[in-house]
Image 1 (tube, rainbow, N blue to C red):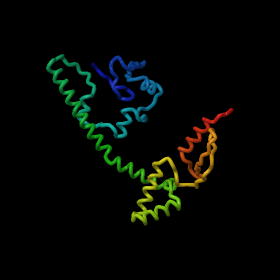
Image 2 (image 1 turned 90 degrees about the horizontal axis):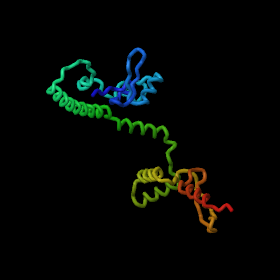
Image 3 (image 1 turned 180 degrees about the vertical axis):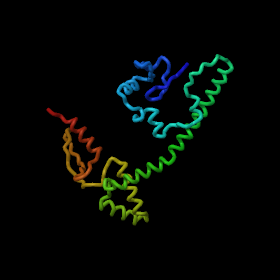
Image 4 (image 1 turned 45 degrees about the horizontal axis):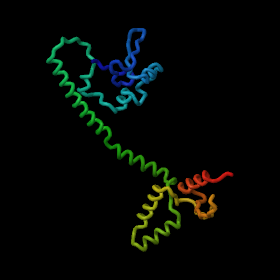
Length: 220
């Protein structure tokens, strides 16, 4: 059974699957799916599309030079049937597949080496360039943390760092604006006290409560 490769993306095109396009000059093109056939008719370059084998090879993301890849080359050489030769060929195919898979894993590890360090460096650079967008502690919060550190003998910088981490992970924001307490009359006649933030971000839970109250109000 011959498994051809897709002319556009390089994936295997199995028998009775995909599309075969025969041009007027007699050349035939095998496609694994209609997506490749449409891109071929639109005269797109497979080396410029990231989901093709040609792009991955040009970008250095696939093995190009390896002895195991030579066995996959197409050979139009007629050979007389020989049972022993077929058995040896099948065993060799299994062994070659194992060797190729192991070499591909090694190639991937070498290619991805240092990626974590590069991502951390890029993230640190992004934070350094946009430091003015990060939440900041107000003067009252800094004084409170300084008094707490003096009482318990802790490090002020460490407490401020923990407080900033809590601000980034929690839904409530205490970084900007001032709190204003107001009275709200509920639909059932009760009165509740709420805290709103002026000149900054409001609490997301509070916004959700406002939406719920507006949906539940009687409009008679």
